[in-house]
Image 1 (cartoon, rainbow, N blue to C red):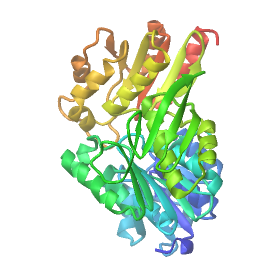
Image 2 (image 1 turned 30 degrees about the horizontal axis):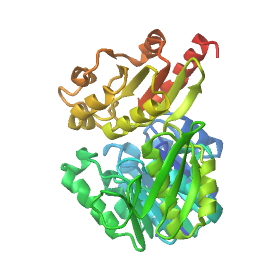
Image 3 (image 1 turned 135 degrees about the vertical axis):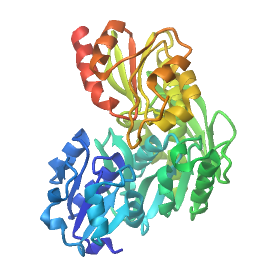
Image 4 (image 1 turned 90 degrees about the horizontal axis):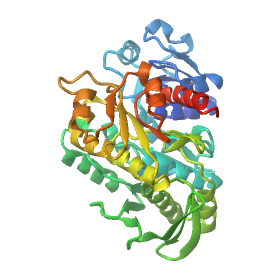
Length: 448
């Protein structure tokens, strides 16, 4: 497929974080872009602001006339779209070129020098850090989150270097052709797709085998490559770690040199690992350590990755995308590191019935690390309910005295009634849309 001959690109599921980055890329490169999504969001609004036409009713009549020339139109869809989607089936049945998001990302990046970040956790933050480091090299970065430095999930550069988030969901990352890649983690996840954890592990082996130049892996993973670790021996080792004025300061030993007094503002050991992975990839590519050090110092973070929405002496509100037990534990560890003596309220929205079922005991352990938990109903995303798998069932497994089921409508009142010093809102569903309401009510309560 020659992307240069494509005139129009139509996205089904355009509001998805990965889809919207590609839509933005095509739009700024002169293609006519439009699409469908289930509901309006800040992402769809930002696309509409740059001229992308979007509608929210699945109906063939809503497809703009300019997209009905199948010779000049590419259709991109996300696997999260149901198989009975009317517009998707129209395009398929009428012989359009219809590709999954991952296939299109593979096409865009296959003729670039590609740096790919894979892993069940940490890939969005790591790829965003790496995109920021590689920005002076004029890399184009496709991210799975909104990078605070750019207020975008696309860092637009030139077409010689690409930074991509390599998503294991639906084996999407096997469509990429990475030159340099890292794997941050290989914990069990997406068992609704893979069935068994062994199949997930095998997909990471297949991804590793696609890397043409250098593979970098978190120490301890069962893959061969350069290793990275904090406070233990590895090819890339962070050490002399201290916290100074709310940020990390640490040294790094690379295979060939040492760089001292690196500053990095994101809290938590997992984020230091993410920074170290990005440093290693950029170093292998050939970016100078001094430039890497400066870019790490100025990296502001990723929206919904331990994002401070309020930070005052009276109350702190943190928003995080964590939706797997390992990620929730990392959030809890970061909160305790930053606020060791404060009471912490966690608001959690489970994501997917299958994930809740598969990791219920681990979720219960992770959530019990907080002082109090308010639990929302399970966000179904692409799934139908599973009998017996409910938030009430998950709540019963938690070894915590202060725990409660709560509806979205009553959430704000429950948060205010709790009067915690620290509020952490976590989940990958639509909980992010509730954050601003909680923020406004907390500001009113504490007269901020």
